[in-house]
Image (cartoon, rainbow, N blue to C red; front, side):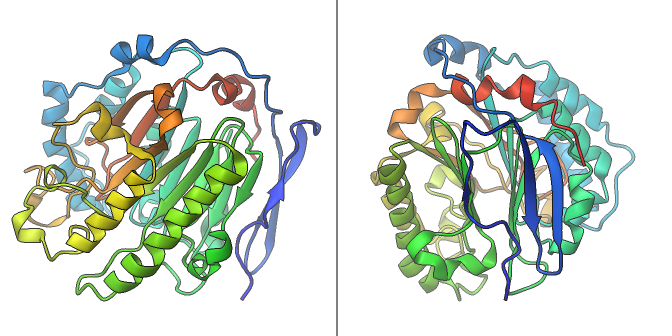
Length: 380
């Protein structure tokens, strides 16, 4: 079966700014011409520590009130409908009011639990992205086949896109990366562990100063039928892959996505009753711990060691309004990259999925300096 994504290729920083970006499909090839800006010469960033105070997210009373409204919206959204009584604009105004330091880089990761359903609420998706204004947007569990890609592309002008769809099952798994700055290289494989590649779970984007890996880790299953595969095959191979990337490229790594594990008791609303549930088994938590021991840092827990905040809530039993959730979505960074991280936040009031977007803000002028120029990329 043919892969539905572009083949691995290197993009030289010396190439002319006009490039053709191709997205390969299983049925046909879509070629789209965009302006891909050349990478700028690195400039000296302001010390991250001086900026953190102004970018630290604090949940306000209004945000707490919005959570209940969002829960009501999501329970309806799971049936493919909108709740006309929800003023989502209030959420967007709150995001817009946040201070963003100059020359900062913003990365958003969001498990959308089926992008097709979210496309029925185009105003929500487009307005959120316009308001958040990420330089890099990573979506997971897209559940799309290649026939729907074009409808998404037209909604997000100004971004270069890279899709990795599941090859083995229609409407399953899948990841996509939207970026304003053209990566030096893009790959969709775990290298020598390519037997994991068929479900479209990983995209690797190399930038000037770091490697971004957006990943959707396999769920162990309601009956833990994939627990063995995950903990004895996927997890060890992924750790090896991350280590290889750091060594081969000589750059720190940023890993983001739905890692499908609540690491500690503080990361789940009811730890004792979920010890045999997928996402909180002893085996899964141990594997996550080994990833951190390898030199990656859980950025949210680093900045908020005692904060109880979740990124996933089931649709049943009004879980979001009652804040009965799990923290399954992460930004992990190599230790050398940690001083650049300004803040990590969870957009707990954004509806549209049973997961919320998570946001990493960092002081990386080597990539962030491209933001203004890259924003002029025309849509196809």
